[in-house]
Image (tube, rainbow, N blue to C red; front, side):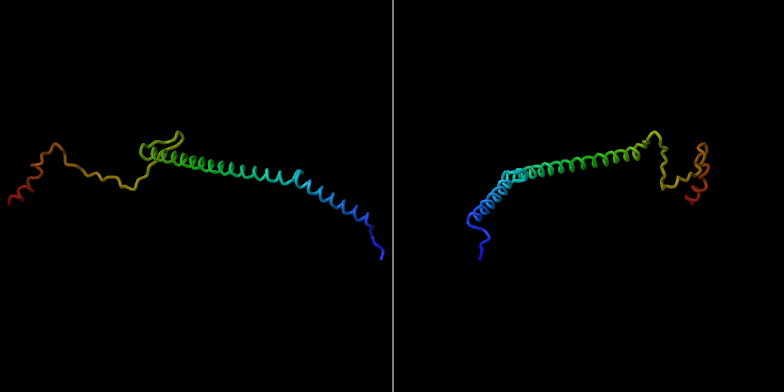
Length: 127
């Protein structure tokens, strides 16, 4: 059998492989996407997530305040319209009610004395 490589060739191949492995590890530890950079980026991501959560909570609070103000203004406007009869400048106010208008009955003339018109009822009551 004929050996494919002699002892010196094996040593050269071994050192080339070790050098290649060292270069890969150097890139892993000290390169752009190395472990220290990844750890730093994780810290930045974590702090940004905290900042985002705080901003989101503040946005929710502001949105709730806006809703309260909008509903509050609507409530004030509704009260002003119903209780005070206020209208906007370009509006015509019409109020419909379910109540029937009062029926007006004729009243006896004020100049006629009650005894003259009610004499028959008084005589019936005494008999």
